[in-house]
Length: 239
Image 1 (cartoon, rainbow, N blue to C red):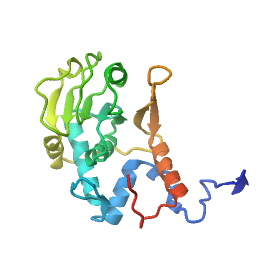
Image 2: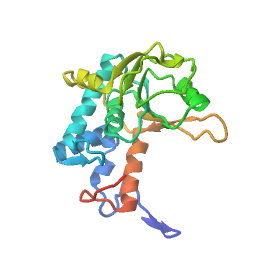
Image 3: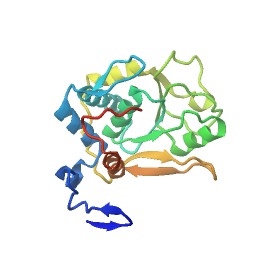
Image 4: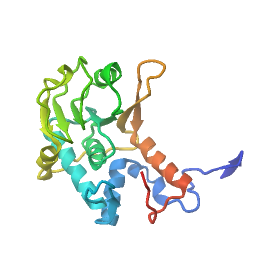
């Protein structure tokens, strides 16, 4: 290790004190492997508690439910490198969908739920999603793309869809997730170099650009955040 401007840098090959040797096992540098490892190690320990009174989500349940979502996606012919757009606010289904998407090899594309009109239209057209998961979807007149499925998490299924989504088959989240519960989870195994998702820039200086995010980047971002804040397994992280 060496110091530069007060910052101590450590080589990945020689983990810093307190860093697990598992960091050098590059085969586990994916969010999919981390969820599976944590579920195996911590089982029914609570992973997330929600302030709105929703049931707690355990590590094991998170793994099982994301497996079901992955299987449900495959049953709808969503697979490697297909894009799945999420217009979902902070809730359990967002996290479950994110990992489920990655487990089947598709690309997780989160979209700002405040976008409307041309901004939302551009990102829908640009990523050409095969399936859209949303809380609510409005403000899009036409996008030049035709998602095959629309999964609605909250509220009643819409009586009519915006023209951009009119061809899509509409389902509610509960039925969608339940349809995958009895199916085998896909055997897709991502690596650190596998693209996990697409994150769009803000679009303040021109049309938003989709940035490709590999699993290794997302894994190391989590490791870095934990290291910078000193989080441990005994801490509670409030969002």
